[in-house]
Amino acid sequence: MTTRDKGAAFETAALTTLEKAGLTLIARNWQCRYGEIDLVMREADTVVFVEVRYRVRTGDGLSSIGPQKQAKLVRAAQMFLAERPALARQPCRFDTVAFSRTDDNAGCDWQRAAFDAF
Image (cartoon, rainbow, N blue to C red; front, side, top):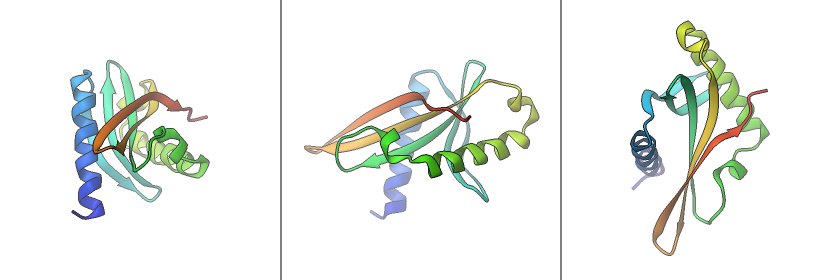
């Protein structure tokens, strides 16, 4: 299995987790010049930008998303919203869904509002 295949599998697992929690998919793997947003979801009236991470060791997903990556995600989200004025008027947040593998068990850690845009 390639790295891209593994990434897609964990994104699918994250999507399933979020949909079971009541979120709905707006976009998947949305790309622009600033990078890619793994998942864009809606929870009630909130637009949720989701970064999916896989970690071989335990640890939260946020620790693997440094300030530079956060800034890229914010710029990409701004471009996404600029193309969709109706969504731009909605509240937004940035979540992480991180998977870690220990003892052959994959753990899922979903952090809502993992970081602020400003």
